[in-house]
Image (cartoon, rainbow, N blue to C red; front, side):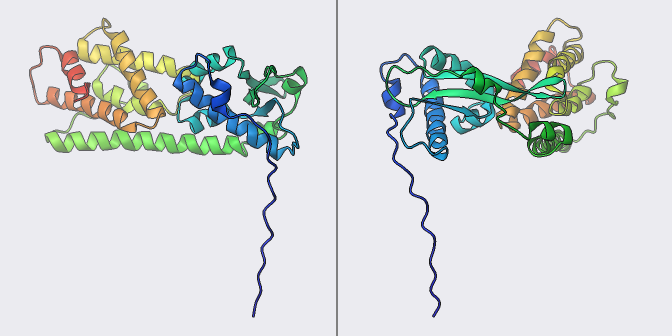
Length: 293
């Protein structure tokens, strides 16, 4: 006979935190801001417990990337940035991006938040010493040696790039099979010329690869090429830049189908041209095909 025993889990102390609904009661906050605060409140309470507090503090300071908060709330980081001012004005949250020294540079390593977790007069404030605290001791090794989070993000960007390329290839194959025509060979990005639709389609796959600071320039270039290819000039460049931006944002938010739809619509337009279809306004045709049904 074998007797097995398990070590009981540690007893979690009951800390007298206020409920998020209690702290937001009577405040002029949007539902989105309340949702974000509920996530940050839960994280702050967990942090207080992990730090071994015996008595619930009024506020908790924690180092958590904005991407984590946004992901737990089900929002994008852009949406999170729009909601945070409401919480800061209401004095429920304080803080912002946190930087660490790496050699001679200061690099963002996440965000530092002070969260109100108990009702009362206390106001969340990030102290100067907390701004200077090394919240990520291995950050320099992570950046320089491409380990940890840097390695993970590099692998994630590679997966996103492969996914974008597969999406464009699938769109190309589906349109070619559906319309029974094989468009002309695509020129390389180094040999761009004429603003052909296919060039824009294939260069859409560069969006996940390009650095965030250079993405706007790439969208601007693609919008100009698309305006030349579809409208024969730059009159509607701003319109096509907006279309590409919206498609990219949908891809970031996990709706890759819109990126595939844009690629398919562009390739279908090119196939129609190869087959000699008469279109009074190719741009209007493309907009109509992109409009949700």
